[in-house]
Every structure is written in structure tokens, then in C-alpha cells.
Image (cartoon, rainbow, N blue to C red; front, side, top):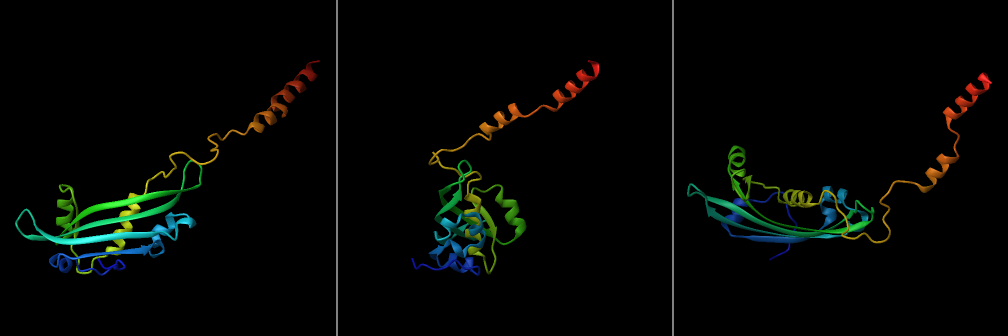
Length: 182
């Protein structure tokens, strides 16, 4: 497999007819939306991807293009417990079937195990790779066990002491009322 950069002008039909396989290893910096999600420590990461193409007979017997996409990357995200950097491995292994229209894609996608996409002459493979990684990122990234001490409470021990020594406003009013009675 010859490493190449994922392009946004891929002819899926031609690749499927040729039973082609393409792949590459790209710096995360080539994926602008992904870079926005990672910590600075992770910007030098590399995303390794592979796409293999084939044709298969559909339900009507008509040959349809298919693509098998695999990719791996390790993203450095902010742990939601300790706010430190946590390496999150992302692995994608998905099949895509291509149909001729948006209507067909919508109709068939819900009934299919694979994802159904519209066949475009210039398919945006680079964007699909980025989308798949973004959809695979955990909503709440965190360490299994955070390094160091994690503060799990928002209570300040000095707060209660400060409240105990602080004069209470209603006590001052009670003192004034008692002084007028007396």
C-alpha cells in the first residue's frame, strides 16, 4: 500500500471498479477541526488510515461501490476529572455503501448495517476521515485513575471558618430592637 494524503476529490466508482486500496499516515495538523479538540501536547500526533474499495451486487442485482475505512489515532484530550492530558485511542473500522441519490441514501441507511452515502464524482474522503474521528471521540474523556490528587469537592475549608466569624445582619437588627425596648 502506497501512503498518500487523503484527498477531497476521490472517484469512488473508479476505485471500486479497480478493487483499489489506498492509505496514509497524516499529521493531525492536517485536520483543522480535530486540532481544535486536542490539547497542544497532541497536535504532533499522526492519523493512520486505510481505505479499500470493491463492488458488490445490491438487492436488485446492480453492482454498487463499497468502501472499507479503517483508521487509528491517539488524541490528547483534557480529562474531565483532573483536567490533565489523557491519551484517548480512537479506532474506526466501518463499511460504506454508495448509492446514486440522496433520497436512496436516506431510505436505505436506516435499514442497513453499513453506512449508506451518496456517490459523488469527487468524494470528500479527507472530510469523511475527520468526521469519523470526531464522532468517535468520547463525550467525557477521562483517565481510568487520575494521576495525583484530584479535588472532587468544591468546598473551601476556610469558607466555614469565615462564616462563623462574620457578623450576622439579623443579629445586629435584634440588638437595635432590644436597645429600643430597654
